[in-house]
Amino acid sequence: MREFRDFYYDVADGLTLYARDYPGPENSKGCVLMMHGLTRNSRDFAVLAEKLSNTHRVLVAEQRGRGKSDWDPQPERYAIPTYVGDMFRLLEVAEEKQLAAVGTSMGGLMAMVMNATNPGVFTHVVLNDIGPELSKVGLDRISSYVGQGGPISTWEEAIAYNRSINGVAFPTLTDDQWESFTRQLFNECDGAPYLDYDPAISQAVKADDGSTVPPDLWPIYKLLNVQPLMLVRGAISDLLDADIKDRMIEEIPDLAYLEVPNVGHAPMLIDEAVTQAIQQFINA
Image 1: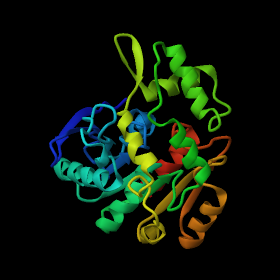
Image 2 (image 1 turned 60 degrees about the horizontal axis):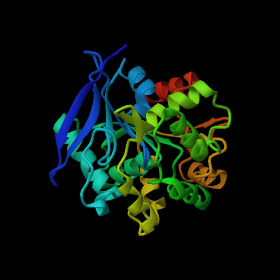
Image 3 (image 1 turned 180 degrees about the vertical axis):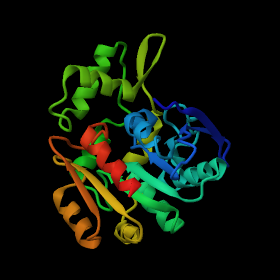
């Protein structure tokens, strides 16, 4: 098992942000940047990061307001342009100029914008259940629960809450898997679980002003046709529907597509078939 080190770095507005840094082997093939979804954190990528660290350095970012990164006293900065700036600062401090990217949901939107901002920054891009257009059904579901996680005083209550908001996306999880999943979303203080993000991130989601999901990303998406591109999609995703997926493939026919059965938004990237496919794609 390859260990990661805690990587803290400062950004221009005074916050201290966090990433997991898996150093990789001495003969590393390069670096991979992993970026999580709206309410998530670095624990989402534990399985895949460990596997990729056999060949690459892996940086797993926690965006401001999540996990070990500082919460922002100005919630209006919880927005894609700010996160993208944070990621370029991470790359600067980590001394990485070109690397592969794996982005889940919001992290995939960030990858698109980063690529448009600095063409050529990525050698490979993996988008996990995200595209340049999002289904209103999924957006409405996410908006209905983000920032609404309390009060919760026991792990049993945390698991029940997680099932209530994510059961539609993961209909086949076992009780043990629900517990493991819940421990990715929650942290613990004095024995009581709490959602591991700043509730104020919900302000940008509910504002509907384009700060969370920019209004038209198709032109930016098309810029991803230069380096190898992979799309992972949950077969029952309510955020990335089949019509949007089909158009993504039509726009970039060389896109490598992997559909994960019996899963909605967003595949966890822990199943052997999925992690192996991503490994092969990035190592190609």
